Length: 184
Image (cartoon, rainbow, N blue to C red; front, side, top):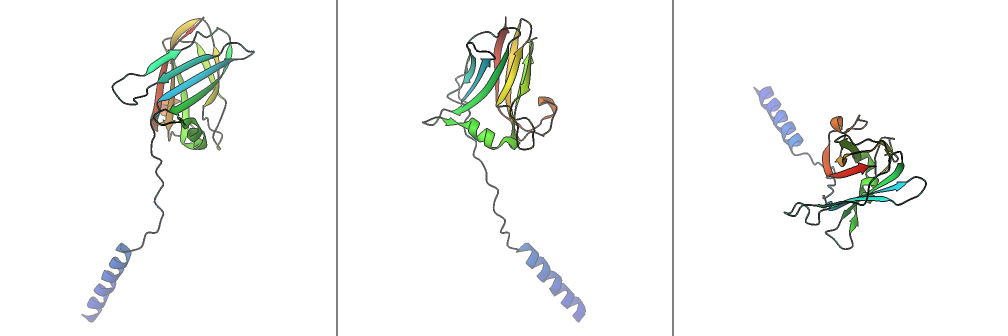
């Protein structure tokens, strides 16, 4: 009987010791998500010429007002453009350039470019994360034959990398911006 009492005391002490252990692990730092109010895509034609600027701007973020979407002109068939994406938080002054954070955390982000409606373009990533997986704040776009449709820019947070595209990337969408585009 003494052995059972002794064994019970040891088990109780062990359970108490384990359940009261001191967990000194530092808490995971959480990046507070800032509003992504403005996404601007600049397409510079190779060989010079007037850049095409596409922008979606939603200053009330998820408020009742819809975003203002603009495209400065049409793409030219057969032309290759060097593209850059800039994301801003314009709810603060001066505006915060969120692209800097996306590029600093490249392993956790990826832009995807998709088309709809028969738009004839091809894109290639120009910048990558530390593991040589695509990031996509810089890219090349080649305008194919005359056509029109929608060009979508989607930024995913914590996508599966590598992936074969938006369909198997997973993660969460930080911002999605559709632009009506014409190639002439």
